[in-house]
Image (cartoon, rainbow over all chains, first blue to last red; front, side):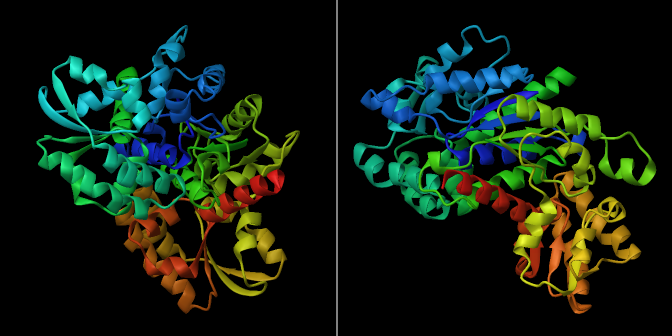
Length: 228
Length: 228
């Protein structure tokens, strides 16, 4: 049974669940991944902890992990890129595999070098969650400060307040800017962002790697391998 | 924390989660309902148990309930109409409120008498899950046998195999038939059915009561009242 540490935010977790179901090759209910989703959004802000020395979400993340393990999770995943800042602590002493969202994204990349766009929260960038891709030879391009302030952060906030249709058009110019700047593809490295593009059926989705969908597909592979 | 006994089927449970999030008045993550979703579709078929004396899903339903209670659920809900056949056994000795999907649907009904359409699985009808509405003065109209065989059951099966876009057009004539026959509104009393209509943005959705959305809204009211 897959355990999902979610709630960061709730709409992104719901999006992950739908993508997990959609990505599963199944013609009957019982061919789907058994999953327990812990979506408890009453947890300290990840960006505030990383950028402004706010209270750490780690105790709440560990509590979620342990609840999921207690009821039988045999693998874990977490549809929130920023929260992977605490991956080392979350996997310390963890008796089951904990799928990493950056590994899942890398599995979707068809390029192994050159420029790739990366749209993430400032906290994800500051924490270096994606730097392992640079170590493998990719050059990561991100929006500039002005774009963060005027499009990326407002888009994330709009999804979090339940207005993904407003978020989509805020995001598209930033993606186009990265593509025009030479990025072969753009990683949507915050799980709120795919919700925004999906809400407006953006044609730019085909130029992006959706970290939520990538993690869902990695979970399906974990499940399929275990059964095979 | 809300506990959700799901997986019947997985896509319907994902649809419930999204509707729970969408129905919550929230501008920040932490204003959302904390929820633990148990979506384990490896459970005996409810229709087979009710209609053909197949193995009972009750032990699996009780195990799901007890897992959710063990990790702190303070209310329970189950986005599957047919499974409410076992409501008495599931609430027996249960220390927390267990929201009933038929109560949630009734809360959405603006008519208190007259004819109302009811599209459900044959098992839900045979089990009499919705008969309490008849006791309150409503006359329930359902599709005939031929429509069950040629549109309702194929639509449910299509959603279960991940093809809701195929399911929508199968369903629309049955809904129109009930409306033409005098139903003031049509209850979609199987949680696969709203997924089908949503997938094709059917204009008939405004003539229907979506049992999934009704249950989600009842859960939000439970949460909001408890905090207020």
